Length: 256
Image (tube, rainbow, N blue to C red; front, side):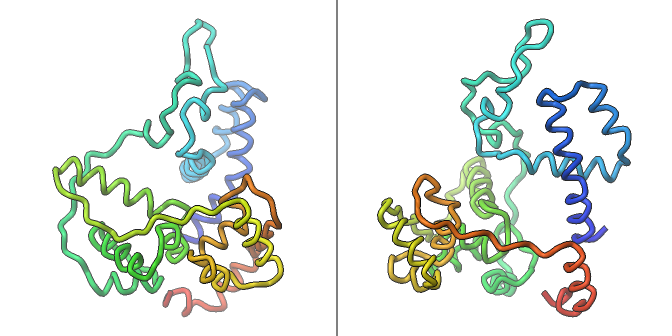
C-alpha cells in the first residue's frame, strides 16, 4: 500500500473513528464498540488506530484528555485525575534509542533545505535545521518547507535533546532565533493588511518576522485570542480530483 492509498484509507476511517469517540463518550457501551470493531479487517483496524491517535492533541494535559472518565463500578479511579498536569506526550513511554552516528550527508541536507522529498538521518536533520536557521527560518518554517504537520520539527528536536542528555553529550546549537512576540495592536494591523491584499512576505519584512509566521497569524492559528479578519482556509481538492491529477502527472509525482 503506497502513501496515497494509506491516506485514502485513513480518510475513509475518519467517520468510524468519530463513531467510536461518541460511543465511548456516552452514546454507547462495550457491545456497541465491539460491534463496530467486528466489522473491520486488520488493515482497517490499524488505520483506525492511527486516525484515533491523530484526534488526540499530545500537548494537552492528561487530565484534560481523559478527565471525562472518573470511577468505574467498583469505585476505582480509571484514569489520571483532573489534577494530572503532565501532557499526553510526557505520559507516552520513550523508546530507549541510542544516538546515530554523526555523519552528515551534505547532498541530503541540500535537498532538505530546498524542500525536496528526501530521507534524512538525525544528523542530517540537525544539519538541515541549522542551514534553515541560517536563512532566518524557525522550526515552524521548517514544517511548512517540508510540508510536515505542525510541531513535527520541534518534537524531533526535543526527542534528540533528550537522547543527547541521556548520552551525556552537549546538544549542538541550531542557531534558532526566538520567535517574535506581537502585541494585540500589531496582530490586528497584520490581519488587516493581509485582508487588504498585502502579501505575507511583504508584511513579514516590515515587522521583522517570517512569511510563515504572518500566515499563521492571519489564519488564527496563533494569537487566536485577538480579533481582526481571519483568513479563510483554502478548500482541499476532492479525492477524485487528486486521483485524476496524480494519474495524469506520474512523472512529476515521482520526481518530487
